[in-house]
Image 1 (spheres, rainbow, N blue to C red):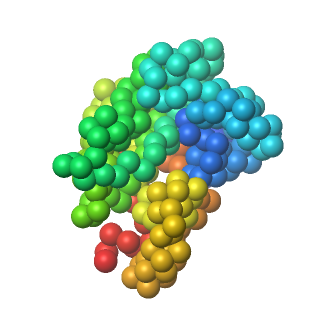
Image 2 (cartoon, one colour; image 1 turned 90 degrees about the horizontal axis):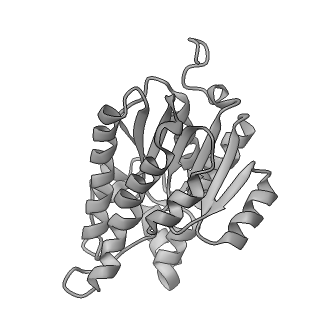
Image 3 (tube, rainbow, N blue to C red; image 1 turned 90 degrees about the vertical axis):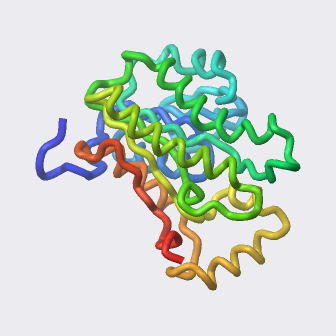
Length: 248
């Protein structure tokens, strides 16, 4: 598959089939466009059919599917007709924030449903159509290491669980490689939606406190996804891509 001169480079992706769940915006879309540029056949999965179809057409992706990742049957149906998957990327998930004594439990439960259980459903749905020399990339987040006091306890727990899940799955599915990307503050639509009207003030505060004095970009995080797919020796690991935000 790879040779010494191309290990860890996106050239490893040429001719492979990459399926990105959550590939219509933010980090997922950035990873999808970069994988397409590297020569991969890219299929994106989004929640809204019309939007997913539009995004796929706009960027020249090779296919699209629509499914709510919290609906296991819908996700299985979306993935069942893909004959071969070389790299499965699972980046779907909203910003679930709420204090455990105040928020609705069903709402808080989405943090795990959108991450752990959707990943279980996706891996089961793909089954043995996942290439033995391929990979799975999961998404966690800096909250796994540094939860905040503002209602992120459950989301932090779900993020940490994704990293443990990646390590366990790397053993269970070997030689399929399984890794997790743990981004810090990335300027994406989900980030802006989570902050709402407070976005500008929060971003300015972050710029003052972060080592690099800025948020990360979706393209930078997407490049991390490509690295995890392309490097054949990266396995059972979490890639912290946070601009040093864990240091402060």
